[in-house]
Amino acid sequence: MHRLNLFLLLIALFAVVVYLLFALPLELHIMYKGKGKRHSLLLRFQIFNGRIGVGTKFLFGQKIKSEEPKVGLAKRTGIKLFSRMKRKYHRRNPRSLYEIKFYYLTLKKLMNFIQVFMRHGVCKRFAWDTTVGFNDYAATAISTGLLWALKGYIIGCISRWLKILPPGPRFHVVPQFGKAGFEISLDCILETRLGHIMIQLMKFLFWWLQIFLKRSTRRWKYWATIRSKHS
Figure 1 (cartoon, rainbow, N blue to C red):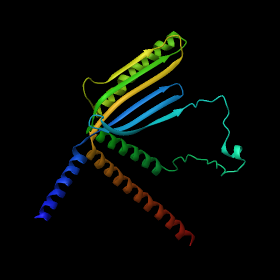
Figure 2: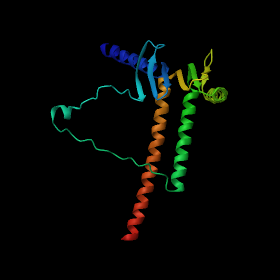
Figure 3: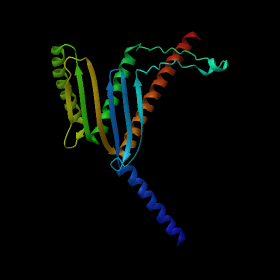
Figure 4: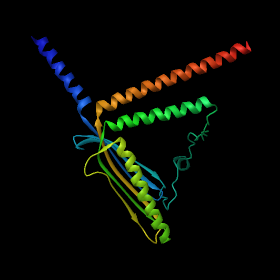
């Protein structure tokens, strides 16, 4: 009797876990603000309409220089610490038509995964505000019109892949005449199922593993051919 109760309890716990994984709505809150050379990006995963969540904020851009110069630990103590090694990263361009085709197919497949992922989700909030200005009034007016057209085109493309809930997207372009500056603010909340994220991630990793094995096999055959010629 006790074993039967324990078995039923385990089944109930398993059902609850499956429900939480596949039926629980998961929200991704994206908030971006940029002004000049200073930018901030907030990424937060949340459930139960934002009552419970975890996230982080990234700050990047121009650093604020303090008036007093900072003195390092090695200079204050006279102890030489580990020297910093300067690493140089070289960008490698595609060397053959096969690599160009591989990068194209990879990008195409990735965009396909993103489209499928977005079709299974909804956008609960989309607010995109921009402030642009130049010293020349005519340049400010032309830039404002171009930004309105660009935003309309981008939101139209997003609406094909992603369902935006009422009241719909909100976007503004505020001209700033006689003063140079550019500010942008984006506030977006995406909602999907946690189970769908796990399924799409597993599909993507499985596809990437297949590509990795194919490339490894191709390289092994290439080096085997070279060694057979020199032997």
